[in-house]
Length: 346
Image 1 (cartoon, rainbow, N blue to C red):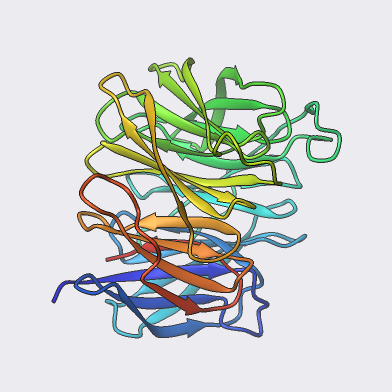
Image 2: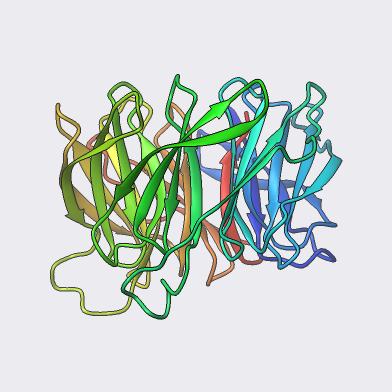
């Protein structure tokens, strides 16, 4: 029976087990909690090291921190390594580079992009750079200032994209690996009021999918080696007849590059799309997320499963994906407090 291991982050307090390690059985889609880790306030986003032996979580507070943990295999053995301050309020996203040598984070309220070295033992070094974002967007409530929401490495490059929800921009930076400094290489504008939140790369093509939290759209961009994004398409993430409130949250691409999935909070759904040869999208289906407020989700690599972190219903939902790429109604829901991130670690 094939088994995967999954980490979840949450908006729990430091007195609670805000990070949890789970065992996932691929044969029947069951989840079993193995370990709960206390001591981190609001561990809201997790980045797993490429070697799967450690991970870093953001502590999304007004005095933000990054916290590194070691994984001693996957049988109930997770321990803290060290912590570093992010130098700003509410770190919302963390990215470990492909080489496992650098950690980048963004402070949503502090409006900075931060760089830290990552040592061989999994510990986080002192901050080497902090780039300040400035500006605003047309939404006076949500875009009163810059709010960088995520950072992702363009595959096989030294370029990193930062989605800034507050300014309707996706900034491209080059990382100097000799000193850990960032240099701006391009400013890419999204649609006004889109509120770019998260991004996902196609596994084989020079395509990135950028999710607009505020306008519930998914924009397809072709990227080049200078970090310039060429807009190919924008597709809605909601059914045409839906009239309720919604903020879109997470986006990911299947391992084979054939399907793209995105989550909706309000509509409480997973939107599925088929990928065309040029990377553009065709709507496929909407499936209930199995709970309320799916802030994040993950696909089990090589397996027909999706796990959704439904923050508002305090649950993880397991959805089987059929051969046509459509998620089916949830087969399982497990109670856990305010889950907001789910990551496969092995």
